[in-house]
Image 1 (cartoon, helix red, strand yellow):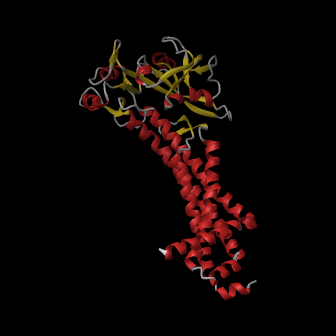
Image 2: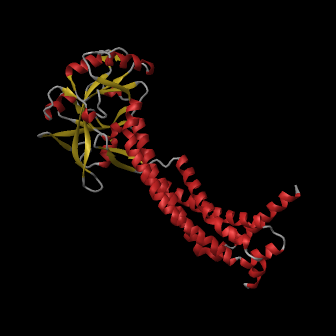
Length: 399
């Protein structure tokens, strides 16, 4: 055991001398630390957008809920049903029911042009016409301000996300729908789901305002249980009166989030890789500076019997310590500045805005620390090898 213990003692001693010498090299160390912090901060911040977006989309889904679209449609925008179709769907087995009938809401989905609060630029916001069961089909629906709209009246309610991100959607404001202005009478929440990005009203009145006749684009349903989905789906797909596809809401919303999530994630990693390359050069410069400043010290230690392996490991550990400090700093800044930050982005499947919050999760912070560690190890490897190979006699003559 004496050998390993002696080797570890050597590594600890050399590493201690290196860390104590950081104040003499503060400029280069800070440059490397800030560079690595920038990489981690940008990576975590950008990826937290994708995590927050997926979280918002998944919050919209319930295991005992489904959505029905026209066969071949990949979103509500390109789907369509007649009133007769929706009645057949509502009569299908497997649906939850209350005293008023099946919990199935036939819905109309249109786009409104609404200015953003922050910039004033126009954005597409979903205006959804719903039927009475809509409030029971969605889990966690709750009026937060004002009241629900009255059926048969030109009134709207808005999701909390839409109210925060877009102008003119506060209770008491008026929204131009078709040729008239409809008052905003309430603000609602829906458990953090995409419904909070929408404006809701009576489907019948929305059909009239946009001359849609008696047509709908989707049917949202609550199942009797999560296990009733197959029974419900089979009854629809085998019915010759219909040409539809039924999907669990979990599957539907997962497909809706895929394109945006992939775009954001790809952008985040691309930017992080480019920045990481620069950070590696910064770490290389820092550690080469450290080795140059400690030439006599390293040579003396080698002359006293310290092995080259202990010198390599100690330099790598010093580089790793600087990198981890930078990673922790970058992750902390990203968490403080972006976690919970509300924004909106385009859902390319529906061509409408979805409001969501950045989510700097623990897994993202760990991933950022791992990136920092990798940068530190790569940046410290070459200087560490150089230090270990430094000829003792030549190093001593330098001073």
